[in-house]
Length: 297
Image (cartoon, rainbow, N blue to C red; front, side):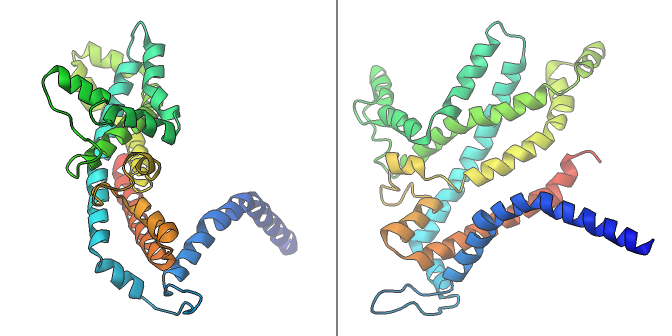
């Protein structure tokens, strides 16, 4: 009896591992191993043909913390995240509420909102490059109608980063709207009928019923938005290349620049490890703390 029970338990365990093996292989090949290799690379010095790489310990991290450009890029990325994440999420919610209402052209509105999402990153950046072109761009042409002078949106340190933020918000709001729209359609209509019977206004219904029920979706979107805020690189290649004077340079572009333009792989690896550690800490906080407050248990 004991042997049969042991055999059945081992068979179930083997069946479970076989089901998990495709995901484990993919994660090992594209997540675990690259992360481990990056951590190892960050502990070695920059090697050349004459001077092979040597073990440097935490020297690359010390160099980063002493690098003013790194802190400027980190500040740029923080400002970028603080602007794009809340605005894109708020716009997505507003658009979803509107697209979910009974409108004559509801299908057209949903398509119009989602269209920027399906555009390739490079195509979207080139489209906005046409908007931002000095003197000839659409924004400057509109400003000229009201007597405003031409503005070099992507060529001025004061406006370059915010111009990038506008492109990101335009690109991501429609993507986040899809999740909100799907969540809105799962809310039972009986709740709206009960709120109408009680005489609750539309704002009260939205604030007391809709928003709490959307909190799990909001947490999911927040996680995705935070990941997106540190992985922007396509737009920068087309629009600013991190300039002028590093005013629009973000962390992933700086990592790429160190690794493939300056051939300083250890510094790029050290920055990557710091980004992974920060994102891991934020994800742990969101799922261990916020998730308990969001989901009904």
